[in-house]
Image (cartoon, rainbow, N blue to C red; front, side, top):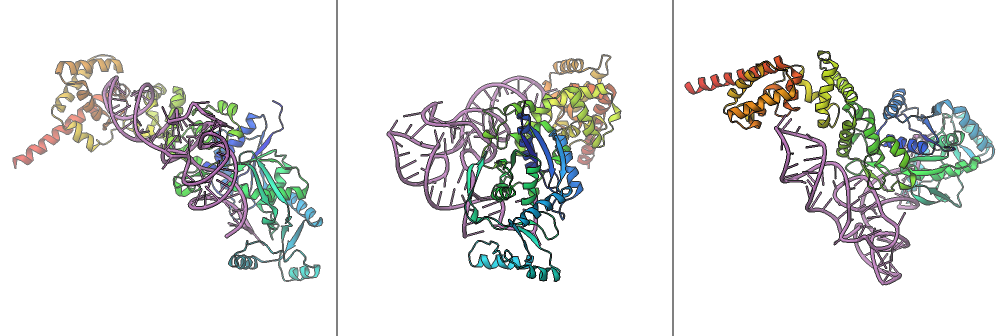
Amino acid sequence: MESNVRVRFAPSPTGYLHIGGARTALFNWLYARRHGGVFVLRIEDTDRERSTDEAIDAIINGMTWLGLNWDEGPYLQTDRLDRYSEEARRLLAEGKAYKCYCTSEELEEMRKAALDRKEAPKYDRRCLTQSESVQAACEARGLRPVTRFRCPDWGTTIIADQVKGEVVFENQNLDDFIMVRADGIPTYNFAVVVDDYDMNITHVIRGDDHLSNTPRQVVLGQALGYRIPEFAHLPMILGPDKTRLSKRHGATAVEAYRDEGYLPQALINYLALLGWGYEDQTVFAPEDLIAKFGLEAVGKSPAVFDPAKLEWMNGVYIRELTLPELAGYQKSFMQAAGLPIEMYEDAWYLRLAEITQERLTKLADIVGLSDFFFSRVPFDPVAVEKVLNKEGTKDVLEKAIEVLSAPFTFEAHEIEARLRALAETTGIKAKFVFQPLRVAVSGRTISPPLFETMELLGRDTTIERLGEAKNLLEQEDEQVFGETNR
RNA sequence: GGCGCGUUCGUCUAGUGGCCUAGGACACCGCCCUCUCAAGGCGGAGAUCACGGGUUCGACCCCCGUACGCGCUACCA
């Protein structure tokens, strides 16, 4: 498809890639792919205090894991400092910007005073007309100036936002914001404008926390003689308490979701639904998302992040995995949890995947579902109480050991047939013979299907576990006997 | 304080003047299936469409106002 669409994701590397950033990246990526355009990754690291290399890695890792591949970049703003200086000098020379020697303390005082007078805290332009001699005096005192943009104080700036619609701002409400700090590093509002222009960005798709900054950027771009890109401001993602999603709300790093066993396609699908929808559909393969995505269908109002729905969706995608894929994932999660995965063959893992697939909501859940295959886990006291300690359990265990010891191929369907026959002959309801066996074999009241579990455990281990359960009951009998005898 | 944005079931949303006695999904509840747990099937409950005024034969949908929430108002982005 012929296209000149160029979009970008421009995070500041002050922390891991979080859910909100991922959603912004996703929408940009979808828009680029939908229109056959270019997706640029740009790191906005002009805040030297808070930016870190680790954060850059985390962002790149997160996006890579999600499959949000970019076509250009990552560009670093700190690599482009000369370019910003060049543009700042130009504006200075044209009288569209000026140097300001006010100190942070002075500015803070002015702000407070304005607020006290119930006025908008707007810079009063006291440095706008400063003579060169005064400037020289300031320099002599060791003051380093910032560069302020001389904002037009009349007229209106209209943003034709693709999500929010037409938004009108009075320029007089803007003030002469700082473009370049005293240390020569540009501020966000300046660097974005230069970058988006230099990188030929056609559509700026970002969080709506930037909507109020947009007129500043437009006015600055106009002063620079740039053509202005289209804008689309996405609604925020909120926590359950309806405030902006943050660390306080628990897991917000996409890497955390990866480590818990979420599938990238599930997270992508879920995130796409936060602020966007297509008829009644809820499950979308990535290609489907690309085919159907459009800015016109993006909602205007913020969305609360719902971990429960993400979990459900992850289950949907886990069930769509092929067995070899699932087995591969499961092995790595089991290994990470310290289970000795070399204990079994690949075929064994395939079989395990088969019987656990529809029982998983997160990949990491496999650990709690399969640990007992590697070594006995302590009996769950509740299971002992409610199942093992029932009348006749010992008898069931004994008979089952007998039945399973007979010569036959130790496969699920055979095991099932013989155990059902046992229930039949003893006259005990099938579920009452299966449940104690489950507890004996897995230690718990919940497990993968019993017969498959036994097959995977193997005849010897299965019989051994049944015997151990029986011993446990015998010990208890003795104790009870001893006590009542006293 | 100023400016801006937003407001449909608990949550994500469908809905662009009559199809809405408001549809779907998650969560919740019940039933079925069933060796447990899941998955699956069926069903239920759940929204006076923030509130108040208009406009209209008719408003969730259009206009105005109010309330509440959020964002910006930094030498953060």
